[in-house]
Image 1 (tube, rainbow, N blue to C red):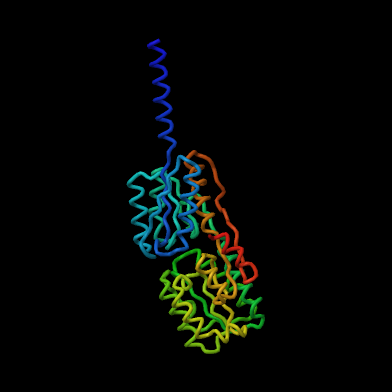
Image 2 (spheres, helix red, strand yellow):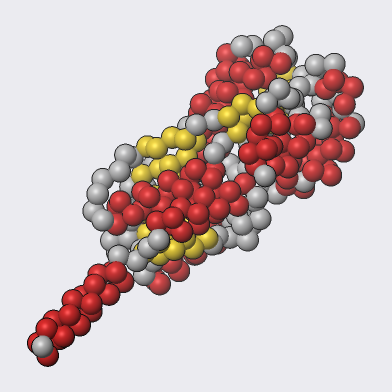
Length: 314
């Protein structure tokens, strides 16, 4: 009887050890925690971690867009012995060493939202950014068929995902005869207030400009400043002379579209990125293979379907 009890205790102990060994802590590192776009990736990550049951999603990144801080936070996670890392890369060159360091320590690393394809990362999950740039261009041409002048805006010049979007945008617009104005692209470093100001500056410096088409939704996250820019150009927008095709479909952006401050939104799926990141890291931690490129889709939102997206966002 005693031996049976000891055996039972041993089995329970082994099960406890196995359970502990199967519990994972994964880091989701955004470019900047002040960017509400990444809040959706956080929500998807944490919801999927809860669903999996044995996973904790730790969401931490720089307070604002700052590549050096992002590298240091990644380094800290490695030192702490994190089980896996998903990072939205602010500067592809800056993360090369720290990603290799993580991989040398047998820590799975994937990128989400923004890739570093020359690094030792094992996979990417996010938008096909070149295609997103193309879709922004297509929607602009649909709204303004006659070629004209345009300005664009990016976050940071070293962000691979944003450079891919610029590539796709230029491919469509310049291929259709559009001309980029002097000073474009402007770089806002993911600063919403600066982004809104830059849009106003483009309109002031180029009174006859036909389109201002950012490749990120930064300005819309400062709705008061953004509305001020649009109000100053509302007559042209309503006349179809300055269509405002904008990226992403966060609730604040959807509301701006519904209220007439945006012509079209081309949205990514950051929530899905956070979900998939957790499943991919679990698979890699178990020694399984995952596809290197994992593209999530795009959504095109107009006044005709904005209510559906707003309802889903609540």
